[in-house]
Amino acid sequence: QVQLVESGGGLVQAGGSLRLSCAASGRTFSRYAMGWFRQAPGKEREFVAAISWFAGGNTYYADSVKGRFTISRDNAKNTINLQMNSLKPEDTAVYYCAAVPKVIGGREPNGYDYWGQGTQVTVSS
Image (cartoon, rainbow, N blue to C red; front, side):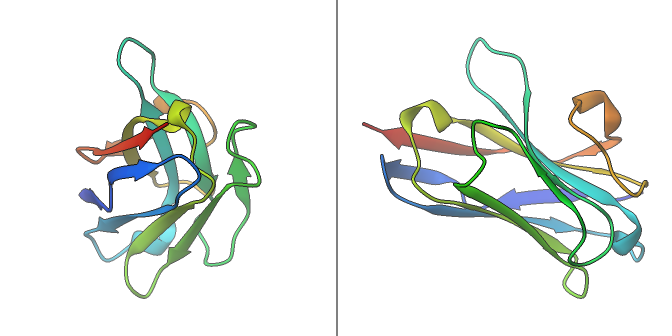
């Protein structure tokens, strides 16, 4: 089992940057595929980015964030990060970190077993 804690959210102006982090407990973090999802008020939770379980592994992005966001992981520190650049007001949401003990978790929320509590990102216009 793994516990996830997100940090790094906040308020930023359009065009700005934020870096989200997700700290994971557990000794087998390197055997978990990780993902970032977000949920805006009144909308369903949507896929943002994912990374396979080995360091420097394959990454996947939603079309809406491709070229602006970068997901990375540091297995020695049990963390993943989401670097978000050129932020837009439509990026405003609660961002969640997710984990699954598989090579890759995919783009669907039900493909992940563990979730953090979320961190709010607000982008002002």
